[in-house]
Image 1 (cartoon, rainbow, N blue to C red):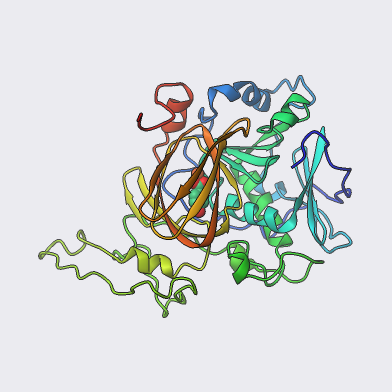
Image 2: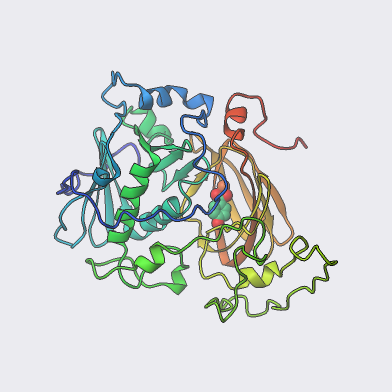
Length: 397
Ligand code: PHB
Ligand code: FE
């Protein structure tokens, strides 16, 4: 990510912003279902970002790089053009343009442009869509990303990159969540070729590259696991088995598959429950995709299986706890706003880490690993942290 030298102009998106898209799908159930979107207009943005936020939400648009707001019904939200020479449609979202060819994705905005590898971009896009823009910031890479305000979403370029900021070429625009979601979902579906699964590990999927060939709609719209109480409870998310199509992953063949015996007293059958979490995770067919397996008010247990590299760099708006359940993950931890390196964290089985609310992080898993991500979905947290009423770290040592 060279930031000081913006890339060369990109292919013109041949887009027609008025064209509606039949594929604007029902957004998936959110992976972190009980939380966003809940706070339209909330002050999820940290104080240090207030200038940018007021730019994005100001109606005056006094600066060229201030974002404007797009309005309109869902039918006109997805700006998808005719297929280009490589067979891919281009998209317009406010002042941003998106197009792809055999290898690369090109993003443009009034003051700059950016090139990203198509496979990395699609893996990040997949997660942003499936997670309903997640908590806080989803950086696709060092330049492009989104900020979730739980009801609206900022799309930014260079906003959290020192060089782009200093050159004053960064750009940010705020959109109602349904608008950006519909465009991102249509782009993800159009740009994902047959045989490529953006959620799979590199070893377990085909290639993202080449001219457009087919699609993988079942993969990019797969239903997310978001338990209401706990996986396996009557009426809640089911357990996984060969019968449900969830085979034990090639790297977890040593994981025991027995289930605990629960002997509940009469009348408590629906309230006492347990399941084999290791067995459950050994049957996950996706990577870097936390599932909600248990819920206690705002406390969400979101375990996940990881392999290769987390396709986003996540900027926190609250503390997240990590408990390493198996194997090893290396984390790069950086300042959320500037990207300055803060620490390298190596987590082995049994290790616990509290990731502060003012960092961004990206994980590397050399072998498929099990990680428990513990989220606090309290919608008041971003504001309380951004205004200094709560600290950015949960404990002082
Ligand atoms: C995170 O950003 O905290 C995160 C995201 C996806 C994962 C694990 C951790 O699979
Ligand atoms: Fe995170």
